[in-house]
Amino acid sequence: MATAPIVSDEQACAEVRAVFDDIRATRGTDFVNNFWRVLAADPRTLKRTWEEVKAVMIAPGALDPLTREMLYIAVSVTNGCGYCAHSHTAAARAKGMTADQYGELLAIVGLAGKTNQLSDALQVPVDPEFLA
Image 1 (cartoon, rainbow, N blue to C red):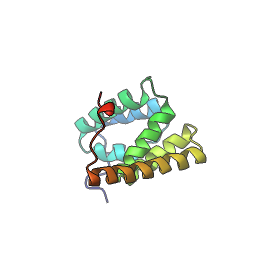
Image 2 (cartoon, rainbow, N blue to C red):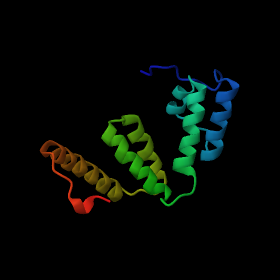
Image 3 (cartoon, rainbow, N blue to C red):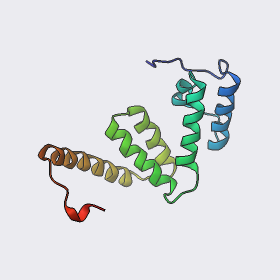
Image 4 (tube, rainbow, N blue to C red):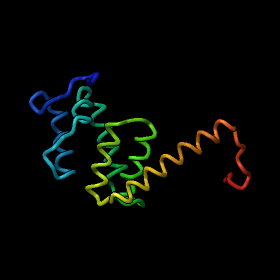
């Protein structure tokens, strides 16, 4: 259950409607997902977060859109955000992620989690060659 209300289109104030409209236009869909609808309980947070998502995930950059989504999946899984893991897995699949790529991504996430925990538990000193 959400800890803030899920704002419907009918309940949205003008500021929220403007962000919802931009989400729809930018993504080329009529769908505004629950993440944005719950953030809409605070219109300033909604707008600020959407602007950042556009700047990081949508604007042209050195990383292609699929790689960005796969990185988002990895961080979401690591942070335990089921909603984000589902949302960005769907987005990555829409951008062409194959079942093999997904399996390999999850293997890397699992391995990194294990080796990170081992390194942390053992307090392995960083090799001088790795320090930039």
